[in-house]
Length: 160
Image 1: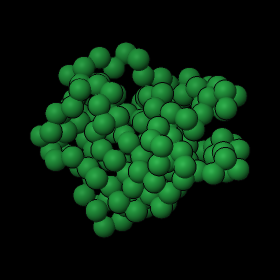
Image 2: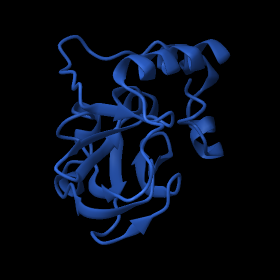
Image 3: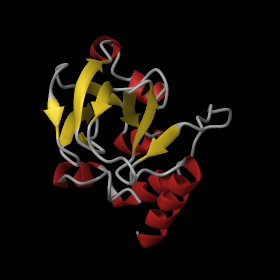
Image 4: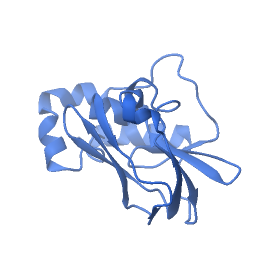
């Protein structure tokens, strides 16, 4: 389960094997607001779209596996990315995590608040800790709803 998030060798070394059970059992906190319009990617990003603009962030599971975020390296507005390309990086006290573009897109806005308080990604990953706003030009048909994403996370946990 954590393998998709722990892609880099540095990040894999940062999470001690003894910590993986705790990471794998991580779940959404009670009272977390669920968005029916949220879609999820297997690499633990979420997307919420409205009026042709989509907000992109990392899931609560991803922030828990990554640890305390201390710096967000976000792209400039106007930057264009291909699907599955690294769109930004998040530095934590453990290592650096990559965030991937779910489809071809152009960045229209970044969450400037993260420059001053990057840990917002941890405290509110699926709301105030959003990373960027984009306009997608690529296919988003492979995204999952919350139930499918939760099953994906459970299946990854069984693989490890």
